[in-house]
Picture (cartoon, rainbow, N blue to C red):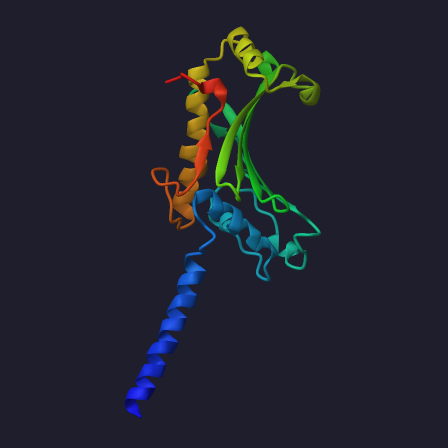
Length: 216
């Protein structure tokens, strides 16, 4: 009888360990961007908790307001840093996260307005959860007061504008890396108990903007 009881206890303990491991190590999460995506989906849970709560500088809002909202009712959630982040070479940048749950995507965007030149630059890192692919895209605005009409994503035109306004493509590439890896991923790694890091992003394919082809 004692042996049978011990076996039952072992089985129960094993089940409990598996459940705890499943909670801690979500099998859907294959990389650091999956952690961000599935972590943010928690705003729809009963407690409304998300890892973004723990990152200093992230603008705070009452996520509990969404606890009774379904993803079908509101498919997009935004997070952002409250203050601009000053990079080493190209000024201060706004950092925003847009989680689009109906298409299972994240847009991690960086935006820099240069008032003295009346221009703006944005860098978008668009991550698709299904394909595990992150695509980088650079956009240039030659009229900061009329962003929609002045936007260009054409690489040849962006190169012309960067040359005209004396902005180094190499500096822009290094700035894009600093924003994504040093600031965004660095903060995530430091403050959210991530399984991943700048040196180990997990299973993800990153496609750099063609603007940076051949730029070391």
